[in-house]
Length: 356
Ligand code: NCD
Ligand code: ZN
Image: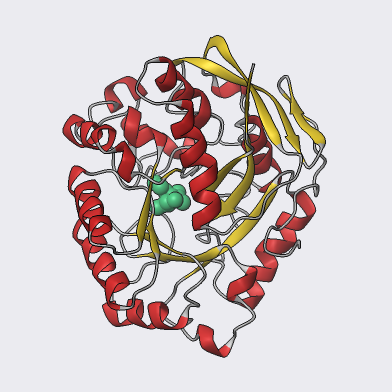
């Protein structure tokens, strides 16, 4: 038995409000616990998007009544809400600010760089800003972090050029951190062949070439965080003509990464650093007392969507052989998951930005 800290996933699409047929606060946090995560940070591209006081209250109300693990919620950067200085009480209640600079699922996207500048100036410097920024957009965002001398975190990087630019920026002392999703480490752009229908491989950022995947593995030390980008859509939606991008990931991340430990490509220390120590520091997450997870590192089995808690009903890793199973999760002294059963009640989860 292996004992690890309660893991942190800073990139989860909970889908409530607005798309609870895909996921909600109950199923997302059940999936989190089953995956070994005791804290999740929720993304704001819901319907409506979470971007001001009223919508943050709305998102947090569902979380408060249903969450089974701890959480915080991101605010989304829009064209009309960069006046954070006029509402100083709002940002500290959120996980941080999420800026969508490239196109993806949902309405939030900022093209105009003068809007980026306003958010960079007005959002409090000590609170996290996370960017969906790919390729050259990412380089522009890093320049802006340098200009305004503030930390930024780049979500789900996937390309060789991205990891190499981040490496160079870090070497120059620019305050940039980054995350990689397990699917970008394990799948490549020819994988849709094994995923079945074409729509099932739709994800943003897209799956990449093997050379990009190799570059991520070659620069593991540049990757600060493994984040799932859990982005559930139903199988019916994925197999439709207009497949929305996104993969579920909460329940597969740790088993897949433990399998890479078994393959000798990762160490347990890498997992602890990138799924606990670093996200805790970057996102300013408080210590959870008496909290840990237990893993049977020798359990060998195949991933099955039918055994998962996510509502979406599928996984791109169906049938993948993995080694390592979460057997028990203890959160604040209480058994919250054991042997395949979620034991935490709805509402047991705390908003980490509110609890002292
Ligand atoms: C995400 C979603 O479905 O909300 N989709 C995705 O492919 N990753 C949006 C996002 O994280 O960009
Ligand atoms: Zn995402």
